[in-house]
Length: 231
Image (cartoon, rainbow, N blue to C red):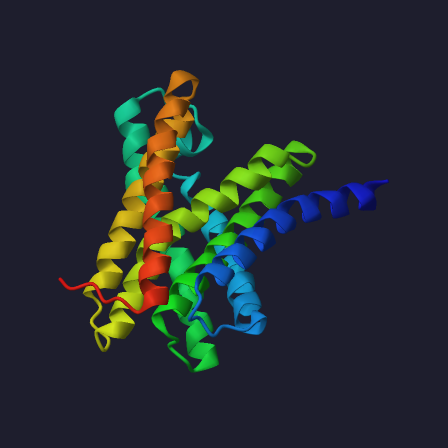
């Protein structure tokens, strides 16, 4: 039945994201976040994904972007520029905006560990909506995509999640946020470019993912132990 397929696809998108979020929340041992703020940020992350999709669809009407968005361009330089200068920055800024809206609505900037967990919640909401869009377009659940996309999105967001936490520790210094956002955008674009090339290039994503995972776990540990990084 159609509604069963719809429900199955939705759960396929939602469950991995929920499990990742529960894991990250558990690692932030000094975090104080209840599930309510996380759920709100998760939903804002889904809205951010929808906003990004609308933007990308608008770009398709521009002749210079159409072959890049559709994947028809064979020019590696153009494709790399598109992922690094458009996809990475747009998606990471959208995820960061979701956290800003959530914390503004909650009227609480949160402690450093919570900043990283909120970044994770936004990223996983974004990935859930992205997976829903992709699976709906292709006609059914994709277990591989359901597991990989949320994982890498939360790894990218770890950079600016760290930046938010450091900004909180430094009494509102915004420089760590800009640095984290720049790194997230660069790694996001690089990952997409390498993945898009396919073939043996897929193996090049492994060291990228390993590095990002190390950064996320190390940062969670530092925040949980109350360590402060100095510039």
